[in-house]
Image (tube, rainbow, N blue to C red; front, top):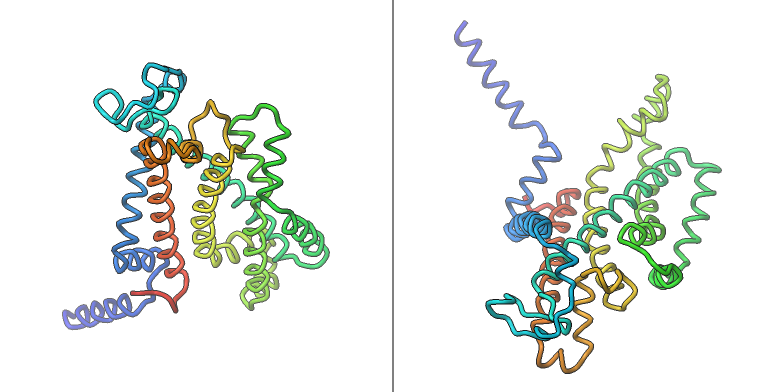
Length: 304
């Protein structure tokens, strides 16, 4: 009796060891192998949490009040990172600006992800007339210069807030996600297990949510992560050009744009350099995390 129990235990352990790892296990193993991606993920999470907590303790109206007496104050006891041409704290604007940029990028990523996944999944799964109609719409949006159109809409609208700015960006940035999901779901919907589910009478909605979508989850995670990085860059770029958030709202791009003044660029480095470094570190961290996620989704590229 005892020998049978030992034999069953050994068989169970062998089956457990030989079973393929789950998606989460592959993800964890990939991050353990890539120390730089692990460090980037840690810094990204801690940094975002610190930014939001710090931003909640700052009064934005008081921060943006002009104080000519403190114009271009150098870093010191009163202003840790100095002050800008209006005597406003660079550190405070950096924290609020980072929060605004991350919030906008995250909101745009979520909205475009939901819209893109929904349209791509429907067109790829059903095909036919629905696919043709939506693909013509997608082709139209692709031909539009996205950056220029966003600038036009921002210029037309006299007064807008972060909410309107997110909607303007989201209107034109869902196309790439929709095309990716459409191509993958088009291939997935032709597989045998989907045809078997249809034969058994399973509804289309259940097949999409329980059959097709789980097999696209790893690709979606990678796509949304890289889209988040792209949206951060787009928001800061628009603010740098003067077509992003209003001047009364702190933004990383606005702080970097002060470097267009040669005098500030050479002599007042504390005005633009912290924002530039923060954008660089943020983009690099997201990029390294995205690369690790991409490798975990592709067995040929995995390190572990």
